[in-house]
Amino acid sequence: MPRYQHIFVIVEENKGYHQIMDHPAWTPVIHRLAHEYGLASHFYAEVHSSEGNYIAMLGGDTFGIHDDDAFFCRQDTESHFCEDSHKPGYADHDLTKPSLMDQLAARGLTWKSYMEDIPSAGSLVPRWPTPDYPIKGKPYEIYAAKHNGFVNFHSINSEGYLELRQHFVGFDQLKADLASGNVPNYAHIIPNQCNEMHGRGVDDGPSVPANCLETNTPALIHRGDAEIGRLVDAITHAKFWHGADNSAIVVTFDENNKEARKSGVQGCCGYNLSSKANFGGGHIVTIVITNHGSGQIVDPTPYNHYSLLRTTEAAFGITHYLGHAADGDEGVTTMAPLFAVSRSGQTR
Image (cartoon, rainbow, N blue to C red; front, side, top):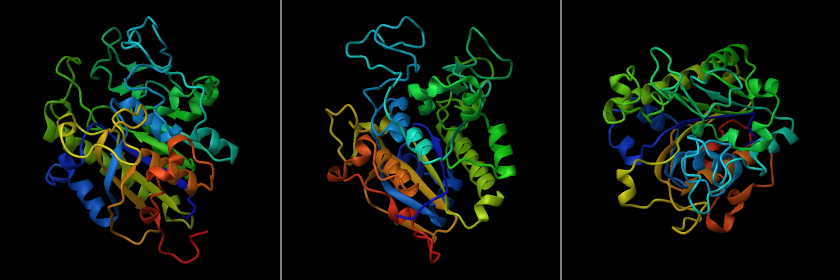
């Protein structure tokens, strides 16, 4: 497995593999990237709902979180941000568990969460704006912390404000970092809920664009596809991308769409309907773009978000894999074919 200096993970929402790949007119960017770079054709999410999959990418487990409640929610927490907290067996959402961020810090490596429309750098708000605090021209909950898996780890959400301001930032900071070359070793890039294919409902305020409506599937997907194109272009045109170090962009999804959950294979690599960590989040698109790769490849190996975590750890020289990223006996392996490099001397 080659060593990497930078890995950017762009995460889209709630769309299954065939919903994307069977509609090239909706997703011209994704199809172009899949034909130019690496496509993991059998990649799966772990669970439903969204939040657990983001946590899995960073902690090697969902830790029993199968809802989209806020990071501070515990059993019987009285808050409208903790809607499921009265259910039996409710999981603590404030995790005192080791994470990829701990591993990176131990090696002197950096990370950021770039969240489009986060209300301010370092913000811990679960959703923004809300009906109680509307913003003119913005749909409700255009920003949702349920898609920021970093915030669920107590070692992160308990950081001082100055540290949080460095770690949770908006797309304005992404633009500035790409221009300056001061980019982190690892980052998640999360578009807002209009631009990540999640969408908003007709009741989510007076300012929901037609191509953001969750019922307008073709337009919503096309909008998210265009956003992927803008983000990938911005990264690949940055000066650092053309340097000697290995850098990668991973475009993936959190889980598949509801209709796709009714049939077909829903998971891999330890998938079990009774598993809290991997009961199947569905077949999803995942593309790997590298600056020193050998070009187009379709890799049919079964992978999931635990495979991506294991790959990230290996790419940064981390040999202790977290949680289910260590489940080699279950088929969790690195995505080495998709991260291979073509230049001699790069597999250092």
